[in-house]
Image (cartoon, rainbow, N blue to C red; front, side, top):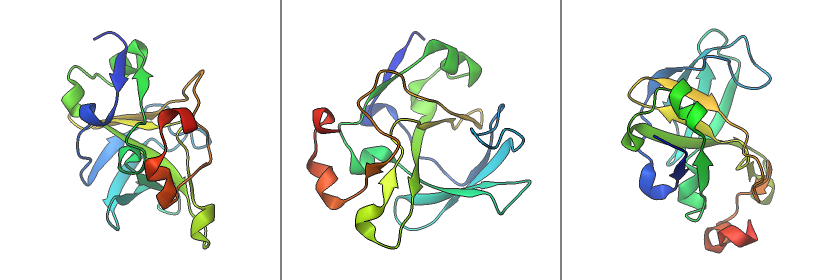
Length: 148
């Protein structure tokens, strides 16, 4: 597979399972095994197996931003052993806040899951309009990619 465009049509469901992050998650390189724990609706927890105190709220970005799209580099596909786009799930980390208008999603650094091989990696998108703290409000459902 060459660079592949990732959009809502090219992702799959992420089920409760354990995933290996070969290099950890940025800021947590020593934690390589994470479990996805479904929570409420489209939200899940990504919890470190070796340190359950380390967990991230994750969500399917396409639920909130249907126009979200990016290129998945060939080297990432090879590293995660992705041979079929049907085995790809994408999630983004959410920063929670008690005030809903301050809840944000990191669209600039999605987490790519190979659900078949149970491998994952957070990637940093280059030359993108997406931000690390994109507001996660109901009005964002109507935004186009240009507005992101």
